[in-house]
Image (cartoon, rainbow, N blue to C red):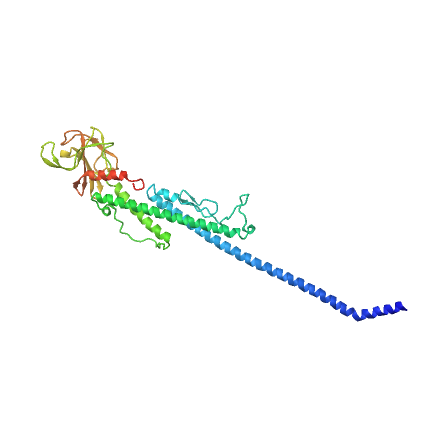
Length: 379
């Protein structure tokens, strides 16, 4: 009887509370599922946010890399300009551009002997132990910005070094041009007269002048180097060399003197230089021979036209080694020392003339001596 009563009570309880228990169980399971899905959604959102941040960081890194590549290419181009500019200047100046460190952004030398080589396709920030480029994906977020900052600092240092080198080239060229112009002026010549007149034709492609500081400095340096080169060509065309090889003794100066034959005062239009008979007489500058013949008191005489009203004469020669119309270079033998014409012994009579008027040759020879005393950067 008791068992029947207990079974009946349990049955009644199950029938009464079954739906409530089932509903409570279903509610707990739904809550767990919602919590799990919410957690999954939060994790997915966090991953998406991290991916967006990573993409943004990658894009920022790529942008900085592209900017660094452009700056490297600009540095290489400037380095080539510096090397070319230094090559057009004096041999000493050519060392200036070599002192500028190359832009070795990618571990490769972009300039070899002053000539640019193609820029790398990408900037290799770091090399792994095997020597192959290590992917940026495997680097820490702190390492990449630091590496890029180091590269930017390296490029900034290179730009400063290039600017200093450019200033040094312009300074040396300007100093050399001033000294050469002063030398020409001391000779009583006008440098602008000796320079070739530019062609009258005009035209050509439009090349805008750069307005950045380096471009402005480069244009100024090119102007200074160009002026220096023009004055060097002018100086090289002047009769500044010795007409005799080795040391020579001057036996008679330019100007009034007692004539060795009449013993009366007379004008001596050149200088006499003692030399052994047969010693070679050499052209003191390049030019065209206008006279190569016996010419009265000059004896065997050679006259060379150096252009722009400048001419030199070599008299009392024993042998003529050139003919009229012949072009000679500086240092070429034009005859042999002798004692022909109005001469009392073996020597060379040497004259310099400007627009047909004789001037003291010592003016040119002293200028040559001072030029030889200048530093290699100026000569």
